[in-house]
Structure formats: structure tokens, C-alpha cells
Image 1 (cartoon, rainbow, N blue to C red):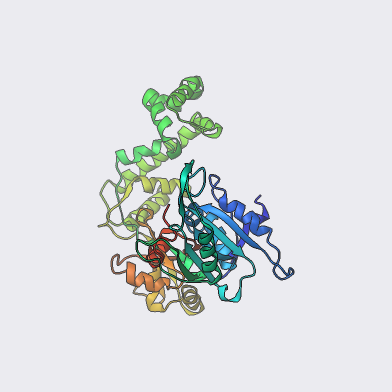
Image 2 (image 1 turned 60 degrees about the vertical axis):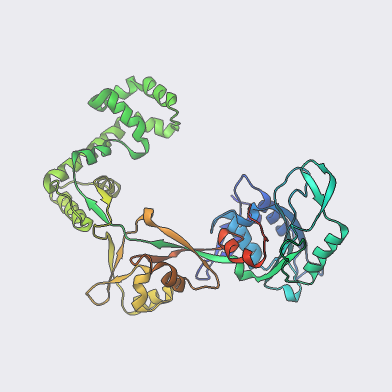
Length: 436
């Protein structure tokens, strides 16, 4: 259960509300304290005074957390609800016990009209006077005139540039949407070759999650492990080896590696693969689709009953990615009439643009192919909220990777001063906010 103060309702890419976690990583609680303060803000509709928050942070609150993370969801909640008025970067070494860059976040739930939908960034990092004697890490401070300059810049909602080699303030005002981006996965098709061989199917002897201890056990005693009570008799030796090799097996995995059922299940998997190899042969195939079809037909002809996971385990063991192989087909589907219209509306595209979203027409009218994606080739792109994902894809991705497509259903929204925002905005505001 998560406290309601740290649950937020945000819209997904299509505008549908969803309730999300607003909890940062356990090693950094700054945004958690900020959300606690936000939860205590007076309701601006029922209070004449509303609420304002000033909170000091280091740079991690600005940058950490990918799209969909707790940190990103907190920033989205704050900015999309138009609570953030300004962020002020302070000089380094301003505090006694740290020299890191620090920032003041200013929040309000009743912004003045000129500030609505806006966020002001103020860089006061070069505005300070030196102390005569250091106090720990602290070697500078604000003079009264410095504080007045920061306050005046904030109250005026000013935009100004700092001249080179001159101390002073730099400030810039942005729309709330400038701090948002879509993170969308770009997929590429899986291309696989396949071939049965004794070496490839041998890996099926061991459970993938317990490969290391099972491999050692089999090297020590061979086929004797399939005898009843053999593993029980060698339990202490096996567990001692696991401890010596720093294999932290939980109770479930300890029981599993010492279970005769586990070993016999893997043995049956090898024997099934050997039967398939005898029937299909050991020729290399560059068309995984036909290879998989041959396996399915052989299983049916031999009356071999495998679970979906076991079938997948065999196919994975005897296949590998090769860019010269045929694309692996995921499914064939019919798209016509209302179904096609719904798909085009969902993707916001024309029928001719469906391949950009992973739907490839065949020679048959209304029939489309989708391909399995290769997770190792998957990439993600950060697209500004003010941009269009499809336009960005056609301009920035398609010219370089022709067979790529957009996985629009993976799209997540994010808000914050991530590296993308940094590259885009920092040249306009000198050093505000600085990297940490």
C-alpha cells in the first residue's frame, strides 16, 4: 500500500487518466518531502491565501528518474498542475557542509496571471561575495543587494542574459510544456537463423535461472543425478559449494536445485529436442518462420506435448540473431472497415503510414504482418511535447534505420530537467541549471 499523498493521477499519451506512484528511489528523499509539502497546500478555491512553498534541493531532483519513474511522475504532477513558479540556482559552497550545486524550488497553487503556464529559471550562481575566512565548505554568501536583485528578477518575471565574464543574474521564462517530452521505443525486427545440434540443445539440461549450480552438479556426478535420493544424499556438499562460490540461493531455488523433478523436467526437454532434431535434421535455416512451422508440425506428428514455455525454450536454444536472416513474423491480421478506422484513429495516421507503426501490408487486401522486435536492437527517443512523434521519427530515425517502427503503445510522458532539456535550453540561459 502506498500513502495517497504519494499517488498521483496523470494522463497517458492518449489523454486517459491513470493513477501512478509518485515515490522516488529510497536513496534520495528530496522529492518525497516536496510531495509531503504539496499535499498540505491549502485549497486555492476554499482559501483566500492559498499556499507557497520554497524548498532547497541539489541537482538530482531536476535530472534523476526516467519517464514513468517516481521522480518523473512527481515533476509531471507539479508542472502539469501549474504549481512550479521558479527554480533558482545558488552559488556553489554556499552551505556549511557541502560544496555541491543547490537550487531553490518555488511553488504556488495560486499563480499571478502572468505566471500561469510559465516557469522561470534564475541563475544566481555567479552572484555572491567571498568570505574572509572559510566556514567548512562555505566560502561565500549573498550580500543584501544580491538578495534584492534575485527578488526583483523573480517579481518582474524577467528574462535577461548575463554578459561574459561579468557576475550577475541570468534568467529565462519557459512554457510548462517546454519541460516535457515523450519517451517512445523504436523497434527493429528480429532476424533469426536456426539449427539443431547436440551442443545447442545441451544447454536445455539446466534450468536457466539455476544454470551455474546445476552445471557444477552435473560435472561432478553426471547422470547419477537422475537417481532417486541421490541429490538428498549430497545436499550438504552442494549447498556448501554454493556458499563457497557466493551463490545466494533463496529457499525456493535451494529446493528446486535439489529436486529430482527439476532435473527430470530438463532431461525430458533435451529428449524432446533430440526427437525434433532426428526428424527435422541439422541443416541451418535462414527462415525462422519456416523452421518454427516445421517444429510445430513435427511435435504434432510425433504426438509430443510441450508447454508453451518449453517449446519457446527449445526454439531459443537452437536459434540466434543474424542480420542476413528473414524477419521473424509475429502475426498476420486483418484490418478493414471499422477495425482499420479504429487503428488509424489510435495511431493518428493514414493507411499508407501504417508501416511506420509496425503494420506491413501483404499482397492480400486488408492483410497486414507484424514482426517480432529484437530487444537488443530496441532504442528509445525523447521527443518534445511540442513536437509530433511521427514527424520526429520520419526526420530523425527513418533515414538512418529504414526497417524501424514506432511502438506507440510504449510511449510515456515525462517532465523535468533531463539531459534532453539541458541540451536544448542551457545555451539560452548560460549555466542555469548546471549539470551535477
